[in-house]
Length: 361
Image (cartoon, rainbow, N blue to C red; front, side, top):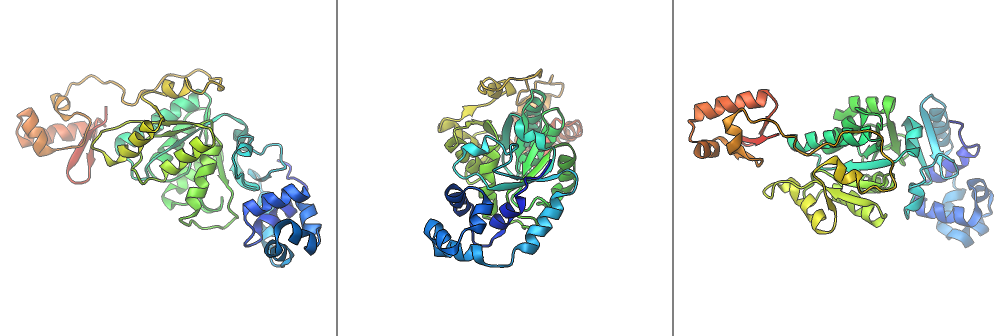
């Protein structure tokens, strides 16, 4: 990508400590391009934005950071996209607080494609992660780019599913785009940089901070036509993303779960508030009326599998312990334990903390 010729001015604005995105947008509205802001007199700036902003803009000290960012953007596969660039995501222009610029690593053309946000719990169940990955792969095969936040659990599963088909994936970071958090997802981030897109509004080198991630979430929803929440507790950050999606006029979807699972309560709350209940990928694709899909196979939350193990009949889909299975099935503990081991090795049952087991299909 050819960088916008005034990129240094954009960087000087956004890297000025204490000058927030809202103030920058106000100055752009008053003066036009960043060059005009930086060449304005102090009195002009004071009249437009107040003495504090004027003092910040006349302060020295961000030149090294600007030069560092310009050098970073010269490397292949990297870009800094400003509000003045044609490739700046059009959907982000519709949200109340679009970032003045974004740092990107990877396939910039993904910003021009239709997208779906897929988010959920960091502490996902095995079934939840499987659902997220299968759904994301189906949506990606249908032509949607999967947007998520590179967190552990549902986010990571969604990115893997997106990478598995043509739509690929965009990871929106709550750090600088050159800082991968959490470190457990470093290998996944490398895959996304190669075949998808890493994106951040935060300056290079910015470490993770608690207040960055709610801010990041508005971009996850803002880049997409809709937001699917796969698993979420009532206090989950995923609900912040869903709320941002609703406020931005995006479709909100939620996958239901067990009434006994804390990770289903957030999804159930969303459904009560009007989110669309999702059991298959078609439930989402049918609602995205402006999206023209490619060929795909509908993916259901729990694909049916013949039950050759009698114990599965007694398990249901809620977590259950060995004693309960013995009582339900009438089988001795040794036989139940042997059956659970077979089912776990075949990928049909997952062992959970606390001696619990959960059926996966």
